[in-house]
Length: 211
Image 1 (tube, helix red, strand yellow):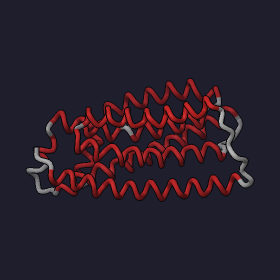
Image 2: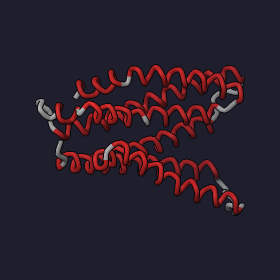
Image 3: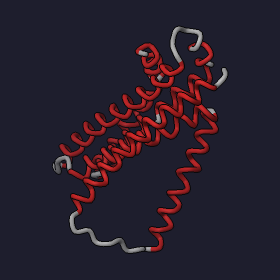
């Protein structure tokens, strides 16, 4: 198991260098503007996307065909991707918190509750996104899965933008902290359910797949 995760991390070395340069550029651009929340959320999502990169590398190198000749089970191969997803998401959160701290230091505002909440919410979104994407990649392949995810993301985005154009007033909320707390707990539970359901679905797909 450790070897499978280590293999993916080694494959990501070059991508991590590129990502590091991008993060520095974004930090220089957004921190002076006071957009720590946006930057922090973007960092988490960028790290979550890295698991897709490892699966693309595996497809190009025909890794699965070779891996299954070794004394490892198909469940372990799938589990390694989900553990990697969590590791990358949490790494993104740590870096997001560091950038938020640096940004608050330069702006003199301190880390706001809004920034922390945005990081948490984006983390849950990243877990859900990865959990949806991994079984789709196992089923349809990397390129088809990417296209399907883009199409799936475009529909709710179009709906949200359409509602925004209609200027529909939202009902007043008496206790916003309680509502936000309920929303965050609900998102955490939903993301956990989707994560574990996704793992079992991926295992079933991978066990039936021929290489």
